[in-house]
Image (cartoon, rainbow, N blue to C red; front, side):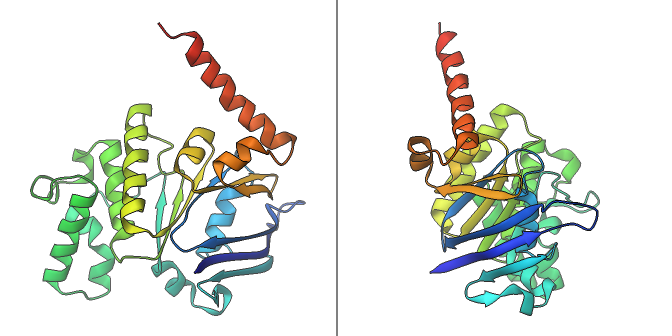
Length: 255
């Protein structure tokens, strides 16, 4: 089933002479893990924010499960999705349990259902519920806080998860571990994941397919293997060569 369809989606901000997102068209199947790759200012975050109506397109349509989201209340659209950002945004005065349970409480879930869901999600993100549910964000490492942010986004069981550079501010070792855990979570849950990154290794490792953007345009949207074997243009080829240069460096310094 088609989860997301971008139909000529364009965004031009009032103070800009160029389109931040320039006539992007693409379809994403339910259950895919899609990574959106590009340098700063290429439009990838803007595209993500239009998907949950934090921004409105200047032109074009975004269709979620057959429904044009411009016809749906923005709050309803956002509550149907999980959203994870680099700055986790946990409430510092609330326990981990209460952070995860914030939306269920607003939605008037009963106490037992909330407790069960918090336990389930803490186990999913590999944080022992008995140890962590009563702790506060300041008592957690950056990687642990990011896991809690992921759990909070998953709490209402959304069909679509949007993630904007979720591991960008985390050290390399923790980042690698979180990538592995996120891939495992996706494989278990089979939800539709969209993850924005500027890291080609992260994009190719996680994505079933990768959207490569530059200057607002979608240059190529394909599997990592097909992109490597058949880069669409010089920009994509340069990205791939930069990753290969890194590989050659590590090969050269092997002991």
